[in-house]
Image 1 (cartoon, rainbow over the protein chains, first blue to last red):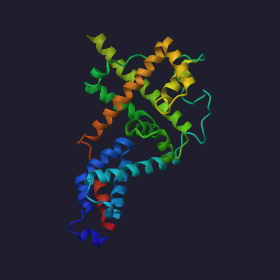
Image 2: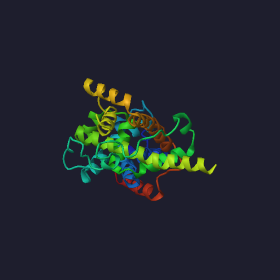
Image 3: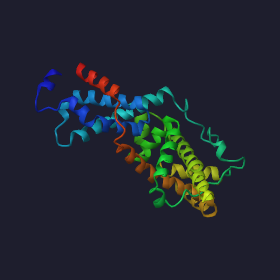
Length: 203
Length: 80
């Protein structure tokens, strides 16, 4: 690799680390929700970037190119984490007995606590506290659930692609996404609505 | 259709196209079930909010690689 480091027209990987390291780290941390995994992702990205620096044509910015590599590394790390700690050993049962769902519904399959409005979306999103609570609730989800959920909601990759990349079944993914959404909305109701009603009664 | 089934389908509707039969059953259920309609609204709100939340986290420049992680990575890069 000495050759590359000596070429003046080839970017020095240390420059990549200095200029883009923090950005890549935040990008990874946002999706992996784990400091050490995010650091691993940055390291693996830069190592892969050195190996394939020939493919960096300068057509896109270095940051865009590195982020492209990082996205693949994030998926690799997610797949590994998923394998080490699978949510289910095999496909979950198709019928209603999904674990963790009983708290939401009574014996006749009605809501034990009816979902209620979180408020006017436009106004909510102007409030700093809403974002803090959302971040807190996101971090309270089991990591494997949160990662899949964010990948789905943010990158908007279709479910089939995600399942193939993570080596999980579509049914498994639907159940994990369902659990993530149920968990997140419940947490938001508990913390966001409780806070606004406490504030109201205090006025 | 029960609320439990409806909530599950409402979530799956974000990840796969529902069948015609499922769509009809959902529509029927939502037209008479306020809690499930609220649930659908929550899912929609959270999806929009999460997309913004992640942009915010990505742009939060107070979050940086730790010095120790940076040193470790720099060492690894030198080995190559």
